Length: 217
Image (cartoon, rainbow, N blue to C red; front, top):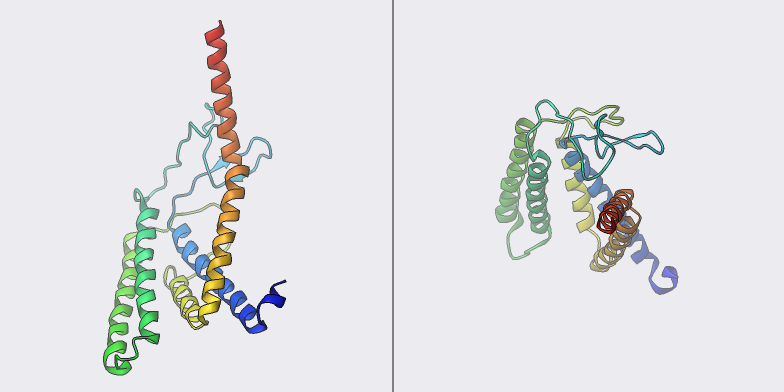
């Protein structure tokens, strides 16, 4: 259907834009996850350990009663701070990319390039600050571990954004449109099919049924 409506060039740019945004999200998420506090849960139905909640041996598995595993060197709200600093990093990267393409009235070598160099130093300082001030949280069975955190993922994030900016306007619009539709679909499906939401609903039903039985008695 898309090949009938759109040209082959537009479809190539749209697929490329989606791939570049996906890789950018992976690089960003890799940095945030590496600095996030880990939690565990034992799924009683499958007996698998999941990175969501932790179960106390003396207390049942409920989402209303959770306890965190204390992690040495953990800074309170560390992941939120890393998200904030990486948000600033993305804003500065966007300004650098904008200076590559416009305004044409500004001389590239005399005006735009020096500004880009200053912004580049600011990004390096942000990464050094994240590296020096925050601790990467230890994980059980971490699997893939990216070397050179957070510099290599940050470089990948910036390069993906640069390549995405080189696409045409139609590719940007179409990529943003189907990306927004996909996000809404995933969030909608996850909200109504989430196991945590279903457990909360069951707990509320049990609490409501216990309360009605006490009222009747």
